Image (cartoon, rainbow, N blue to C red; front, side):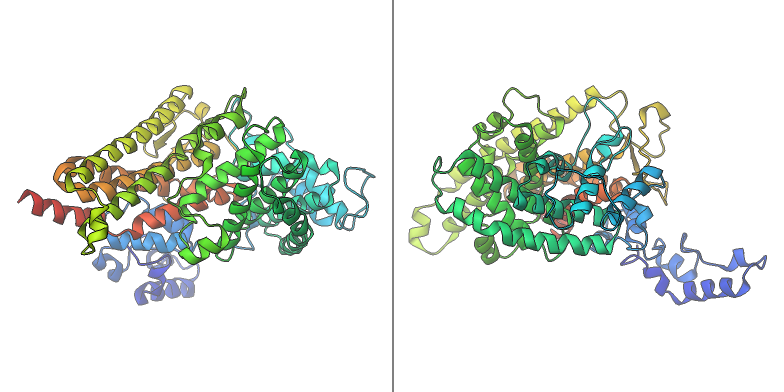
Length: 554
């Protein structure tokens, strides 16, 4: 496999063949001489036994090579491709279909600042960018059979919405309250989403400036409310306002995420958690507050592993969190009370399970710290550590806890399978009746290579499946770390988990066509791609395990 997307274009023979075909033009022999970067036809590629990398398109590269995960060099190439995925500014059509509704959305939003608009008292007349804001509000409303979000376009009894979509959908009705600071934060969120969706540079610039203004306008109010940080000291309305502000800011950074926004994401996560502790789990009677909380929880549970990998000093300054320290969101009251007397969605039930994983990681870290203390030359550290026998018993008990959460996740998946008329996913070589496939005219995956790809009923279910696989991969990585320290008792189980982790990683990568075909999927897939990258960067676990297990069995 080439070391990166487009590597074959650097091959001298490939370059000569392409140049020759261009020179020949429509000559009848051109087809026999050109190298179209679709097959390894040149001698150098064939002798090296590599697949042609194709054009400099990371998505195509991922699609072609997702199933080839057996060699560490292949994994490094896929990591490179994942890290260097970029959306072309000139190809907004990659994210949007040619339907007239999409065109009208773009026209309404970008021209609203200059075109006359019908009078409306929804937004204050002195709000900057008022006409653009009104146009955005109309664009983000669910319109049957269309809409910005996939959950609106595909009508089902149980539509699946991304976490960003839930936040936006919860905040949208609150614009009628005409609260300046809140409306400005919502305006920046809608603008950055539409700007990214349409690859509109002017909207993106407007979003950034309005976001900065919203932060400045809200800071004093948030500091005033949070100054008295005792539960019950602040009126519920004050806490609700700053909670919604913080969620809007977090959603902005999540949608607009780049390599510079990690610290901001962490800061907003910490801010929302601090406000939630004061707000308490019993106050989510409003549908908007409950939906906003659900959206935040979805963002948090996806980012708590993948983003919280910054240097410890940055974490302490911005949030004071560690990726291996569970938060109060995993407490039974916070799992149950915000959704009291409400039927949870399938996604929310998955988040309930995933919130248990940080506690397992925390206990695993403590166990390894105990081993270090016992092996230390410091007598005080040795006295406070458990004996080898106690350590083994603790580790085996912890593995049982891992398996209990793993079984919950498998039960969740089995319940999902049982509720579907067709399979959740299938491989490309299996024909599937068209009646089980939902056509979304906006999110249409393309398959440059028909081999080694999985198929889904629609992009919504592909996104939920990848979320599930990401959580499962996180869980398996924690189990593998613990089992590798217990090879004398865990050889067979470790082999099974290594194979399952490899299969899960492969499934996530093979889902790339569904997640990269539209902006909504690209936003939802960022955390999963980070998980995949960390999995590959752990090194070749299979080779390490083979050498260790061989020495034990010898």
